[in-house]
Length: 154
Image (tube, rainbow, N blue to C red; front, side):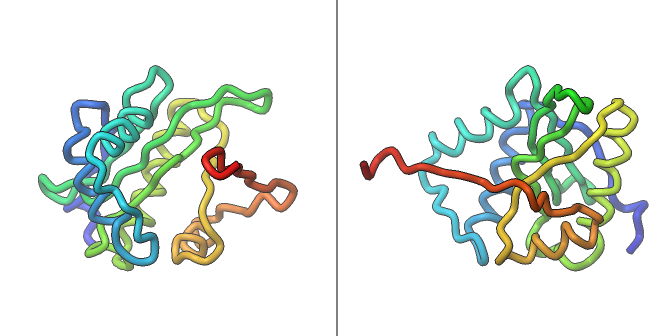
């Protein structure tokens, strides 16, 4: 892969249109099949991730095209300041070509330069992202579990 054709940069809410387009193009397809047809809900979700005081968003570009995005937030914790990645994706057409590995490496480098101590993210065990993150030296937090509760079906 020719790394010189890619560039990495920090993004803010002014990039929301590009971010929404990439996000929908990736997550409405296999294996996620998310339904993001409610434009208002999508706009609010991206704002929640990109438009807050502690938001931290990075983009990977190929030329003028956004092909990767990482949206999350900074969290101050007793072990140091962490980057919680809420969403990370690479354009479906660019997956498997090294762009994701390059992107994660750039995120690690930028976060290290900011003095952050850890990266944290959640993903499913049954999606390709699980093995991708393992290859990037992320480790499953075996002593933790994610809980959810549906409030609509009580």
